[in-house]
Image (cartoon, rainbow, N blue to C red; front, side, top):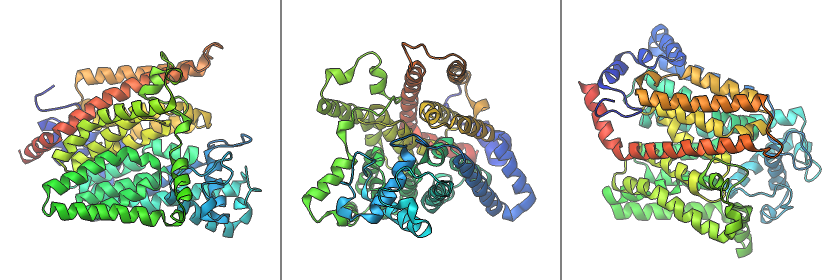
Length: 520
């Protein structure tokens, strides 16, 4: 590998080619299609390419929604689809004091208040369309086709309202600023078509795009030096899904670094502190009537009694449990402390680097490393939590084309047991194949060692999929394929975690090299 280059960074010749012939460098069908639009529409290219990219992405998301979802037809609890629908009925019909107390054994509300307000709004709309969809208690397990269409439409509308504009503004004005119009359009399409988010939100069924959209707005706003607005959008992310705490340390270190490095640091620090306190107060207003109501919200949002992880997830604790049954050796509280200590140890190097050298690009790496560190080491991790490091990793595709695509594919593989349970095997295959075919850039620019490692990992993925399809698991080890998935995916995530930390530390030097290459 040439001096000054890394797994995801182009050589001098490649950088020069990118400036003049990006389609040739990327060599992907998506780049070719967008390049064709560029040559045939001239000044209208950007607008036409953006509109066509959005419409194509929305079509793919809706097509995935035509398939199954979590818990479809499975009595008595159904699944996440029913949980989301049930929250519409309880927030619509019950006083706020009962939202986090009502029938907790049947999908009790356990997401932060902004999710509850979102559910109330959707419940209000649903009640005016068809009251039976959200009738209190009697609507449990309701699965009519019309309701499914409505719920799918709400997931798409939520994404269009929050996530979509954040990605477009961030890419065009901050993260890919200075890149060619073709590169920007290519990145927009790649992020909108990311298979993991599509399959979880529009297949399995959730509203992760809202939380991720607020975080994307945070990362975009810091690029405009609007740190107070960024603090507001991040508070919204925290109050939509508690998973966004995975991003909390990088955001905290970045904003603190800006207070230290920037002018009027003390005033900025006080403004940010006051903003966070006000946001928390406003979003918690309905629950401030009594201490018990407020505590009940926190007990539901952070249910430590659930255990170290949910199901079998590709992180350190689940992988270790194959050899050592941690739940038999430690009390739950001890596991909480142990996981907290290991998580802090994992994410502090990235956070300190972000504190000392805060920049919008380094914040993306910090969000990636912080959330991946939490995914690998923290308490009560779900397999869907891999969506959090995938957001910044996908945004960084122009800087990390080789590892970025690789990471996305391994992350998709890690979620396969969940998607298989939901009957989403075919959408999983088609979404991964389509995304890799459209964005097959970067392979030729990798070193021989990276190509070999990538080929071996893909061979393992294909091999495990093929074995699972044709060879039934032995009766003594019914979860053998899931366990092998966990062990392989965890080992790969540890490698990616080390690589992205390395890239974050060198990001300033690499950016300077890139500018010199473009100027040459």
